[in-house]
Image 1 (cartoon, rainbow, N blue to C red):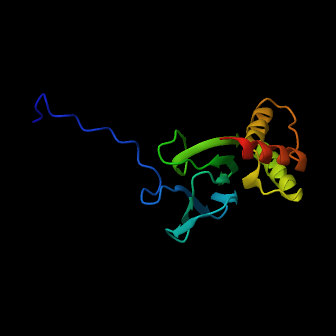
Image 2 (cartoon, rainbow, N blue to C red):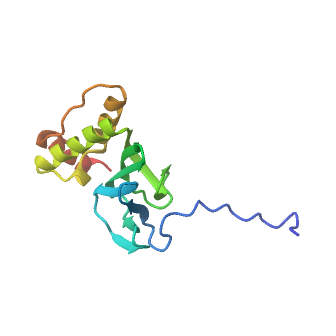
Image 3 (cartoon, one colour):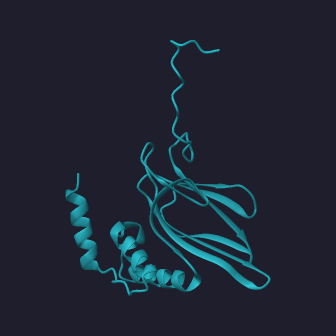
Length: 173
């Protein structure tokens, strides 16, 4: 029993990914033609194989990664989703996302295969321009997401925009 003068225990923040290293974890599952999760891009800091069908990838704070989810049943595709997520530092605010522990800064989330294909094409175009999607301006991912949701075309990401982003990032505190 607690006395009136005994302090209440502090509420800890929710557990974050891999607590020992403060990494964000992404769980990937692959069941051929049923459930397929894959990493489209990202710099993996670590990998742990859980089973023949499941593995867990770890990302350092600030790492950006693209995560695709697809599922089907006997009648065809039942869902598809693509998310671009930035891993956050311990103590930073974050949004939860399926299969991402604890969560991250969700820069883009698109559902539905036609829109997912458009984002995959945008990623391919970024890579074709010689730019690493991990280094792309976070605002560009938000731009793509908001324009697709509104049914509008989005601007391509080019070397000039990328140089502007790198310059802005260099002077930001």
